[in-house]
Image (tube, rainbow, N blue to C red; front, side, top):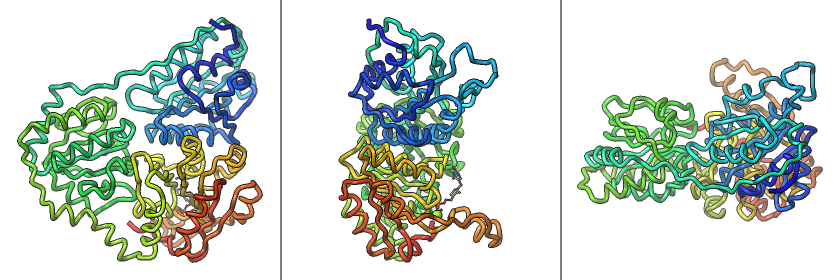
Length: 545
Ligand SMILES: Cc1ncc(C[n+]2csc(CCOP(=O)(O)OP(=O)(O)O)c2C)c(N)n1
Ligand SMILES: [Mg+2]
């Protein structure tokens, strides 16, 4: 037992839970927690310039390290600023802990304009948090945080929020810290595994659809083993890319996102039994697929809610993806199997889209191939909501599970740079490349100062086409008959702007120079912003499918 303020107890309990990095923006109600950092120099405190950045960074950190990402904000405007990033972590199934300050308990609910007063803040946050609670006493701070970690470590990983009133944070008590716990993952019911295995063993054309749950559960190797036993094609959602290498003859990209491989769709349609693991089939715009009426679907997910909202599968198995897939592989190893996919057909479809893109866009795909060969496999890409991301997703892909991040169905403009910031904090020796549009990049440009201040040496490519391109494309070629209004952007000089922060600004205006400039940026050991403009941008400013 140690006497300290509840603010210090927050930091000590985080340390007890194994946390060594916190992204935060300070302010009156959380200064007792900040004071706790003074006595805990082992925690790397990254003070950001915006709460949205702090939460995006915690998300990027979480998704690329497998650890829990922690962010800290003041209530009211701080918590609201954090909102879009919480929504993104929620959609992306990322384990982020948001600690928010709160007004003093004597001010709460009186609506007399206390500092940062927003009544019912928990109500605002609840749609984007898996679990959330306000501290009801100062003494319960360690228990409350420990429960938050239990929520983060069990079931589907999604963000949680804890709010602590500032008068509690200032109170001193004799605190007992709580030891961290590891929780056993949800095992698959043996009878259900056996039923699922029977369905798959009897299939003539079994297929697997894998979502981000496979990455979160680190089930990539099991997935590859299962696919090999079944000789089944695996359709990986964008967030699951890398769970099996793209070069694996059974690895296909799922035919349903903005980055879709439409050529793979007939293969999926042709399957008679489809196993969905750790993903959404029609409950998310980013992972929507059309199901054929005659198919048998088996859905495995750790979250019963995701199983219920999916569709009507023949069989559902609530279990951790790693445990379920490895149990299925063990079972199927011993069975007679009926799989008889035409390997020639699979081989043809495997490369069809890639070959078509190479033929249609030799310069662009050539640059991507060059980059793929030169960048280490572990390179992390954060694919922002920009035309530029499409080329990297199609041409470079993910070298390993979790190395290609998206904002999932939230499609959050502005998330790529700050998410990359957190990914780089968690992976200082790995190249982290965020892909931003000129519109998206400016959302968090202030946090270039954070990158410089803390030596966070990520690379940010800015696809500088002088417009909110996707919206303008809608006006020009989509629904509005070329009535362009309000979608042009006048940007600052990005190289000069970057230089003024003390970071390195590079410019590339020829596509054939892009790989060299990116390699120069990766090797610079400084935060780098690359202004992709001129002819290079013109050649990439194509919305291909
Ligand atoms: C938070 C948020 N606001 C608005 C949008 C709508 N939106 C989607 S793409 C886009 C334009 C993106 O422009 P830019 O970042 O320059 O990328 P480009 O399309 O030009 O490559 C907008 C405004 C969004 N997805 N998210
Ligand atoms: Mg743009």
